[in-house]
Image (cartoon, rainbow, N blue to C red; front, side):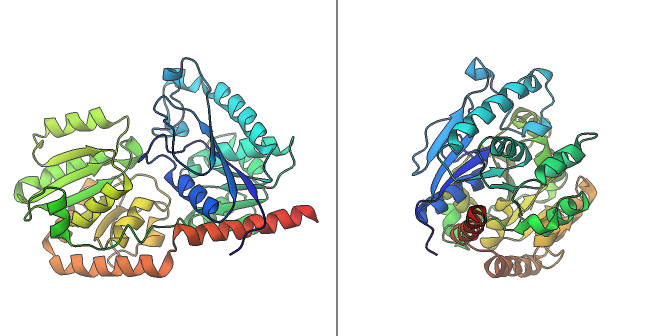
Length: 402
C-alpha cells in the first residue's frame, strides 16, 4: 500500500519501551516501526521514567518529565496507572496530566492526526483536539475495562471517549463490553495485534535447550509477563509447588520484571523450590523466541487481559498453552482445541489442567498444532496491521478535508 505523501502522526501513550527489550507498550513501538517503514512520520509522546534510555529508532520520541526529582516519577509503567495504590504516587497524577497535555499540544503543531493508546491518553488527545483541530483515533485494551467501571466518573469518561473520530479494539470481547457501556459501535474498528512470524515459529527444542545451556531431558514450563499482581504469577508458583515433587524433570521459568519480584522470590524460597523455579528477569525478543522454542508448555495465569501478544507468540511457536479464561483469551482459544482454559484465580482448576497436559503427550501435540494453525490463519504481521491503521488514517484525513 502506498501512503499519502508525508502523513504525520502523533502517538500518545502512557506506556512505551523505556529501553531495548522492555515489554512496556511494546505494541506501540511495533506499530511506530512499521508505519515508519511505510513512509509515515511518527512522533511518540510518552511519560519519562527513571529507567528510560535512548532508543535507536527512525521516528521522533518525546519522553516528557512530570515530577521532580526524576527518580520519583513512579506513576506510569509497572502495573499501570489504574492499579497504583500508593497515595504519594497518585499525587503525581495532576502533574502527569498537565505535562502530558502540553507535550501532546506541542507535538500536534506539526502532525495531522493524533492516535492515542489507552483511555487516559485518549482523554488527553481529545483535550488537545479542542485547541488543534485534528482527527483523533483511540486504541483501547482490556485494561481499559477498569477505567470504564470506575464509579461515578465512568459515564463521563465514556461520553468523552465517544467524541473520538475512531475507536480501535483488539478483540470482539472488548468491543461488546464497550458498546454495552455506551460507546458508538459505528466508531469501533477491530484491528488485532500483529505478530512477528519470522521470529516466532516452531523450532528444534533440543537445539534450543542446547543454546540456552539446558539439559536435553529437562521439561520446561514457561510464563512471560510483567511481574505484577494482575499477571498472577503467585498463583502459578503456588500451583507448581504442589506438583513439583511428583514431576522431577519439570522446571518453571518466568520471564519479566516488576514490582512483585521480591514477593515472588520470597514465595519461591519459602516453598524451597529455588532449584525448580527460576525468575529469568527481562529478556529481549530474540531471547524470548529461544525460550519459547525450548519450552514444552506455556502458561498464562493473568487475572485480566486483552489479547496478549506473548500468548500469540507462544501459539505461533507451536506450544501447547494453558491460559486463564479472561478478556479476549476465550476468543483466541477454544478450550480443548487450541489450548486449555482455566477459571481465573482457581488453583484447583489450574492444577488439574497442568497435570492433565503434562501427562498427556498426545494432547500436547494436538493443542500445539491447532494453536499454530489458528495464529497463521487468523493473525497478520505487524506490517499487515499497520497497513490497516494507515487505511483508517487516510479515510479520516480525507473526511476532515471535505
